[in-house]
Image (cartoon, rainbow, N blue to C red):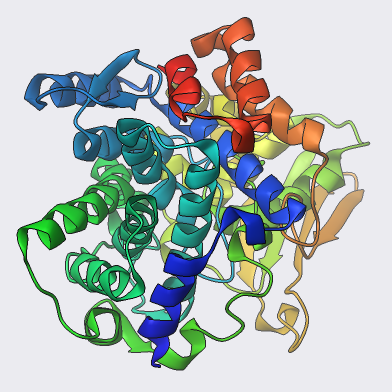
Length: 444
């Protein structure tokens, strides 16, 4: 058996009855966090207009567009929901591979499960195996320097989720993965650095392609025998380690090893923001007294050192801005990346005093890299802190109530308190739902 046979067999044979309580809990947590990110992002102007377009262009609507109370064809509902889910940079991710697996696979799994009237247990199986496939194939890819972590492996993850919902045998799962991999788009970081919101479409498009793979398979289309090696090893990536894909498969699932975002910006900012928030937590000072803010990181995307951002998306991919916002407002939630905050003179002034140094020695071999931050005042006082594993990551988990609180903060004004509480309650009982539509009806 090659790696694709092993992966396809894993998808076909994994059963809810085989899952530990911890694995089921991880799927519930990721589901709550991801639908929260989608609902929160659904109200952005372009996403609301996109939802309306999907409704107009759809035939019979069978899948809910979250946050809008309407339905569309599953491929278009997935396109809209996945796109909305990355708009505010609050979706979870996985540092072991795949970038941000949940926002790439969960919307498609939810749309197809809703159309089928699948049970909560079937949905849990689909999310878990799709997440595993995406993370493992993504982790085996050494992406080219300007290849964004969104969009590339989402189609194969969604295809695996849909294949699981359909009950496909292993050989058919393999065919689905190969068809989906051949539709993987090539997406760059440049859109994120410049704040072009077409970047948010990357996961939406890959989710649509994952469902499309199922339709193409039913129509009789064929794919390569090993499409991931071809696409990810020669086009999107510099290399693809096929053997690494199945290494350890069946042990602790990747969805149990994820991270949840507590800062509303690119993950690369998070270690620095953790350190800044620690350094300022118990100190008061006037902004005019700040001489410099010194941040040292083991590595960073060069595009994140650009000039002062002109829009929300660019601000989320700009280290000096994010650090300055944390210093000025002592918070890093979605509110400090809004246009009116970006326009504040205080943040611009502090951002000009932020110095970011790349120090490779902080990435000691065999250890989690360190990031340091020091706020130096004009009177000589220095407030410093360092961080290794950011809060919310695998190995540095946050309490369950904090994750629930994040969901409530993101969705309360959109869903209303009562509906938000209903979503929390329903997700906590996900494995006992006879029909996943009990959840999507609340999220509409």
